[in-house]
Length: 331
Length: 56
Ligand code: FES
Ligand SMILES: [Fe+2]
Ligand SMILES: [Fe+2]
Figure (cartoon, rainbow over the protein chains, first blue to last red):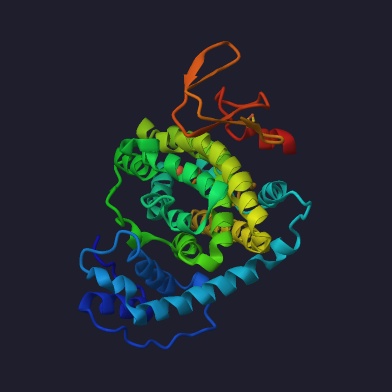
């Protein structure tokens, strides 16, 4: 893909620097504005992180490790982490501590009452709204689970084996046509949408960008490996039931079977992934490194928080009342 | 093979899983979750329904 259009001074400075091969111009940032709700900052972050994923056709490859860009990104990441820690404090304060981390994680997810996009898509969404949802989701799904792969090299033993097992399934189990990102591209095409990587980045809501960026904020930093795995596990644990609803909604509005197929696959796949992610990856990691417990919980709470923002934005845009929470989403 | 409390049976390394009626289902994943609560909508696989059953 090529560099996107900027959405404000910060993303403009980043994009101009990448395009021109010049150091980024200093931009005065208003630290009062939360990074989480600042689309200019989130787009800047998304673009900077993308250098570590597929990159851009119009950017020289070595800019991935440009110290000035890394410093700029580090500031944004630190603010985003602090905001997420603040936002999740109440949920974490109320989190159970039974001595069985797997049960605590499932309970934390079950206690979440964020708005359910899946219930709305299931029963009420128009065909246009379903298409809009699919387009928003593509920002993540076309690079599905890639951020978690960065964590593999930081784990060992049974925890590494468990994450590899999940990733192998996300990556099609040896069949490239079954890569979840490929299934998503198929789903988009069947629905008449553009399956080009990054095609819907210009329409991505700030919440969509933030949820996508959080995976990289945690996944690219060894210190945050516990949070990265908590985020991944919450993603998997809020997927099976919602995906069944979304698939039913897709069928209700008459979109093709290939579009629903991605969601049907996730009903089954994520019923497996959530067990492996919560029990073998998260609980396994904390058994080896007990001081990571707080960060694993933080990752779970951050995922629920971001998901509520993504769903809330879309429901508000459609004038829909928040639906009853049902353990949402797909990974 | 491992039973997840309140949830499915995780099975690793199987080629085929037989449901109660004896019908064989091919395994295409490194691990599969076989429904142990009896409430799944797509037997023999777990589809997450056990959570609703448990809570409701
Ligand atoms: S064990 Fe999960 S649906 Fe039955
Ligand atoms: Fe997936
Ligand atoms: Fe998954």
